[in-house]
Amino acid sequence: MNHPIALEFRGVSKTFGATEEPVVLFEGLDWSLGTGQSVAVVGESGAGKTTLLHLAATLERPDAGEVLVDGRPTAGLDERELSGLRTRSLGLVFQFHFLLKEFTVVENVALPSWLAGVSKKESWDRARRLVSLVGLEKRSQHYPHQLSGGERQRVALARALVNDPALLLADEPTGNLDVRHARAVQDLLLGLVATEGKTLLLVTHDQEFARRTGQALRLEAGRLVPL
Amino acid sequence: MTPGPLTFLARRYLKSRRKHRGVGAPLLSLLGLAVGVLTLNAVLAVMNGFQLTFIESLLELSSSHLRWTPSDGQPSADQGALIGRQAGVRAVVPSTEGQTLITAAGNRRGAVLRGFPSDALARDKGLAAHLALNPGFKGARGLPARGEVLLGIELARGLGVIPGDHVELTALSGASFSLLKPHLVDMTVKGTFSTGYYEIDAGWVVANLDDAREAFAGPSDFFYAVKLDDGNADRVLADRLAALMNRPRAEFTTWRDYNTAFFGALRTEKAVMMVLVGLIFFVVGVNIYFGQKRAVAEHREDLALWAAVGVRPHRLRGVFALEGLIVGVGAAALGTVVGLAVAWGFGSLDLLSSDAFYLPALPARVLPHEVVLVGLACIAASTGAAWLASAGVTRIPVAEVLRSE
Image (cartoon, rainbow over all chains, first blue to last red; front, top):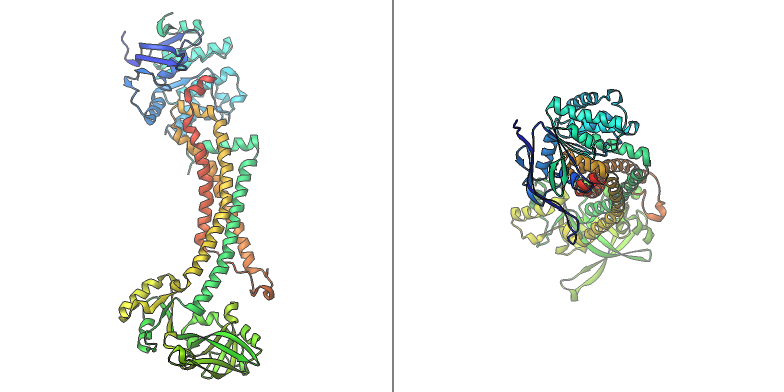
């Protein structure tokens, strides 16, 4: 079955480090991800998994080649256009939740929507629905320090979904969680792909989790190969 | 009106800082700025009080806003009336100004002799307001008739004369310097006057205009003293009158011409004082700058996250600048209220001994535009410092911060 392209890397090269001892992460990487698909990327530490995700999220720019999101090249976009793209099209989940400690669960989820220009009422309504979706409706007025690690990560997932992005980018979302909580987050992410038609690019060390996605790849020497 | 998301963020961050670090730094900044606003308002009110009282006395009594000195030295009732009919002209009084030596009971003093018509106080309310006539001989009041003089209260005291006494005034006559001859003119002291300005009270003799023109003044000492509704319209009116009366512009001089150096010195004094006290704003601004830089550093992860989810860093600068604005507005309000109260206190309390300082009270005059200017400078210093400090928001390496965890 052919899927429209949600994310595409065209000849992407990225090198890290000092000029004397550069580390080449990617050299001419060509790869694409179809809409509604879920792909997991595993690999050793330092292989470039997070960099791959940051390139997809437009948080970093490639040294050569280009990254296309929803078929749109991102290389020529200025800061304002990139911000708009991230708001509308991308949902990011990190290994560390990055919740704002000064704000409650529902506020953490609602703020990206409110800051994107949606009304306060609509943002809070969306946030409450998503908090409920991740099973935390009774914790909506709690602060991050009052939640467990798994709960915090579920809040981070709800926050990533608040602007209804088509593409979810998750960097080790279960890396800091115990087995039970990790399973719950995995179910949530994969459920979103199945029921909401989201596209998922997942970076993880957890091979079992990777195999639950539609396609598991290994990042090796700057190339993506089937696991 | 519901506050926007940036205000919501700023208020929550402020609340959190208050809770975790106390109100110390922002409160100290607020109090520092408020002290600056207070001091500037109080000091400027007193300086204005001294300067404006001084300037108004000089303008109303001595120099007037505009002088027309006819080159032939002859009064012209028609021309005087023409000047008086011009829009913006408050009063026109023919006058002379010369010098004399006054002698009484063996005492001698040099004095400025001013000649006014006997109805000058009725024509010029400003002169009447500043030239306070003390009860004269047998209770007589008013400007002198022919053969009479009024003495400044300090001059009369120095000469040891009282109303009803006689004084001798030295006049000079002669067509040229080599032919000048002094002669004495006997006058009766009708009374004394007070102006609140020592130099005038100790150095002025007021005579009837006709006496002054006959005995003490040359042609070039005669002029029409013109008072204006708006003292700053002096040059415009001088140009207009010269054209209207078909007279040389040089016959018209304005208060700025003959007081340039003095008023310039007063302005410089005030400007230097504002700069010196304004340094408080700079010092507190530096404090706010470093406080906000620390706040930005403390929220690096939050800011990186906002950038990652698509919030433009330039918008987030407003969150940190808002605290500077809050501190600035609070300090301006507090400093203005207390500063005005202090200025009012200066003006209404009897803080100075009139024996020692020749002042009935410490003069204080609040000028609204200066109060607004000081308040705005305070807010600008605080908000500007916070805005500059928040520049770091746009330089946060988002990917690096998100990766470091």
